[in-house]
Image 1: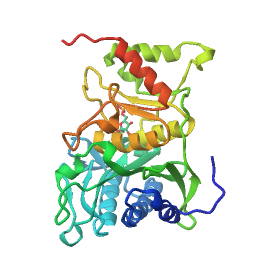
Image 2: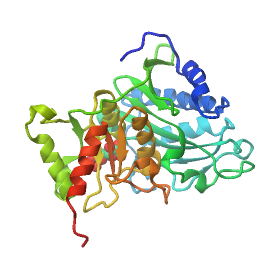
Image 3: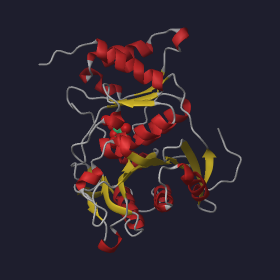
Image 4: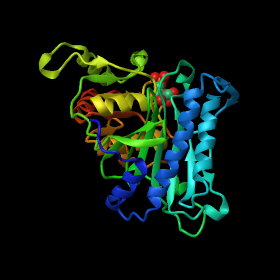
Length: 340
Ligand code: P6P
């Protein structure tokens, strides 16, 4: 999969931008600014074990979850890198309840940025891969003033670009602007993201499944049947599958994107909407995986076609190799759960 050409992210974005619908170079500058923030966050994540930024800030985020110092550093870094480029009209982050206004003289840009600054943060102390996820839309509000909540509540099908950064054994930035999925590996020696995975295509069928089996008791009966089906032996359908679950969405989906696999965070009897957030986790990952030839649904409908109602709403997600996602949808449709 590796690429031999010496292609930097910046050059790739500019060369590719002719394929983006209505690209004026602004999107390229936006993606460049995002990569700058990613480099600084990567630096901090990689030295986290050495300086006092491990551990809790003592604060809770808007969802009542204890906030790690790196979470807030990543959040602040992204805002600092993105709020004065003039390409945005509004931002939204997992770490802020409301939309984030752009300073007045820079806030009439034509794009909207949503992000999860550091997904998987509960793994930080254990030095497990974590990630940043971003999603970019064109504004729908009038262009002569700041962006609005409406700009941030567009269906995923309207994204113009999406990507993630995975801080693992190396730091990789993976993005799509609607013309394929491309992966770049950070060379820390000179701080450039170099094209390492051009035109990523995820296998149509796999033998990896990723789900937190600790929630088995609470699952939909059709999902229970599906997981048992994956564990049966049948050489013709590559079963039993292997179970791989890091507990960090970006890392789990990144591995499955490259190797093939299905990642599931379903609704269950305790959490009727699952755990993951539609606007800055499910939608960007769905755009990327679909562009790589995969599929992403909430078990019933395409993630990208769901009309968001709330900025931080959660959504069940089944995402990855197309045939595997179709199979779990079939298992769940065949078992009708009586409405209590
Ligand atoms: P669980 C990390 O906290 C996260 O938001 C995702 O990155 C990850 O996929 C999921 O939660 C893991 O949740 O309930 O399995 O620990």
